Length: 386
Ligand SMILES: *Cc1c(COP(=O)(O)O)cnc(C)c1O
Image (spheres, protein in one colour):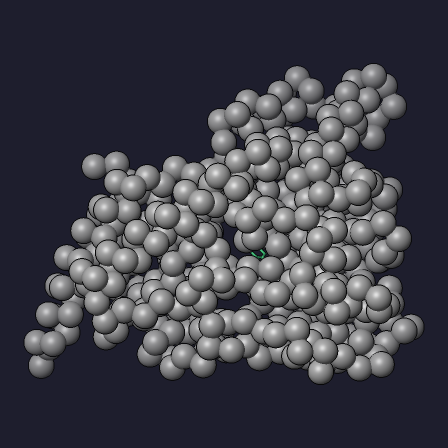
C-alpha cells in the first residue's frame, strides 16, 4: 500500500512544474541578482517576474509591495518588529490573539521585553475573535494589530475583512499571518483591508525557506536584518533566486486553481467528517464547524490520546499530526485548544488531518477504515486496562 500523506498543514511537496522552473536557477542561471552584468540582469528579471506573480496572486496594486523573506516565520518577525519599532514614537501598544503561530507570539514576547505592551485577545470556543474585541482593546497608544487569517491547528478563520474595515481610517497598522489561508481560499489584500500580510512558499507547493511580506504602498517599517540594500533594504542578503522563482511559480499556479480546489477539498473534508461521526463516534470537531479552512479537520476522540492514534496511523503509513507540527515533540497541550477553553485531556486527544492537492476520495476512505479499527482497538484496550 502507498503511504498516505495527510499533513499538508505542516508542509506540501514542491509541484513538478515549479521544480522544473526553479532548477536552472541553481545551476546555469546562478548569477547574483545584484551583479551588474547581463548574467546578473537575467536573475534580476526572473526575480521581478516572480514578484509580479506573487503580487497578482494577492491582488496587490504593485509588485513593489512585495518583499521576499527567508520564510513565513521571518515575514511575521519583520512585520511585527519592523512595524512596532518604526512607529514607537506614536505609541507602545500592540494587539494580537492568544492563538497565533509561535512566530507571532514569540515575536510579541520580544516586543514586551523591549517595553511594548501587548494585548493577547482571548478566543471563543470555536477559536474566533470578534471585531468588537479589537475595538474595545484599542487605546490611544495602539500602533499595530496582528490577527491570523486562518489558524494552523484548528483551521478557524478570523473576521479579517471586518477588522480591516474597523482600522481602515485609523493610523493603526493591520497585519495578518495568512500563511495557512493563502492558497486555500481566494482573497484580495485590498478587500481584506490589510497593511501587512505574510505568506510562505512551502505551504502552497513551493520550496521551503522562502516567504513574502506584502507591505501596502505608503506603509513604513524598519528592517530587522542589516547588510546590502536588497529588497529595498528591508531584507538585505543575496536573494534566494531559486526559492523566489519557485514561490512565484507556485503562486501563479495556485491562483488559477484555488477556487476549484477549495470546493474539492471541502467535499473531501465533509465526507471524511460524516463517516467518522457516523461510524466511529464519540468524537468532537475542534474549531468552527463551517467557518474553517477547507482542508482542515481537527478532531478529539474521547478517551484516546491523539499521539496514540497518530502512531497507529503511522504504522499504516498514514501521516497526520497531533496539535501542530511546531509543538509536536514538546509534550505540552496545544496553546490554541487551551485558549479555546478545552480541558488538558481534550487537548491531548486532538488529531489534525489536513488534505491537499494529491488527496483523493480513496485516501479518505482508507483513512476512515483504519481509524475505525484503531479507535475500536484502543478504546477496548483502555476499557479493559486494570
Ligand atoms: C507554517 C506557518 C508559519 C511559518 O512559516 P515557515 O515558512 O514554515 O516559517 C507561520 N504561520 C502559520 C499560520 C503557519 O502555518
